[in-house]
Length: 103
Length: 172
Image (cartoon, each protein chain N blue to C red):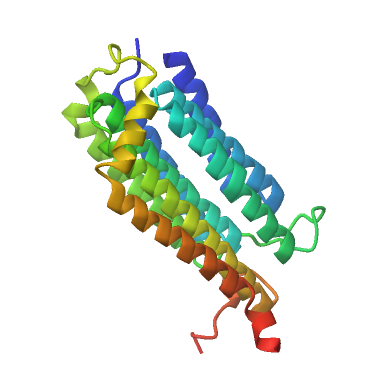
């Protein structure tokens, strides 16, 4: 028998929490971006799981997933460019050292 | 089917956990790649083979390579184990938030009747129709978001180059 939808939802909730934990608690900016990617993937997995279990005939959920993947790619490119720019300025990607707005 | 689900979920979850807990950045990135490939496996299980290919191309092919470049440009080497202290200043707040979010999501999903009883669909549809359906929808009903996405990607490309080249422009 195939697994019920709830398993996929649980799994992507768990992945989302892992990504959130990494994005909020790590110090390195690149790992924070990795955590954000994990959260994106958990969301996209939800789209595909709901498409498979409930709206199989219509391609709408797949369109949402395609656009989410494209936006994730754009976000990743911009984020890594920002990391490189910040590294030029501070000579470090340590998020705790970027406090020039904090006086 | 069910065994494959558990194997893929073990790969994905362990890869994600290692990706955010390991000390060496390259090891983190490799774990992230394994985790993303596990998600591609889920797409195969869910009959979304087109998305498994997209996942492999976009995430593993493009984003992981971008991250390798970012790591190599901002860290001196592969050999070093990284700093002693990997957690940020208020790490307990971040972990607490993540635990609360996980608990809330878990409680919501557990209560949901829909998630428990809904059977899997997709037995009767011929397998080759999926990509054709996506392609038709993308250039007919969804053409405006599609073009907007093209503009967004172009803007992101130019913006990333401008942000990363800041120093060179200033020198001129």
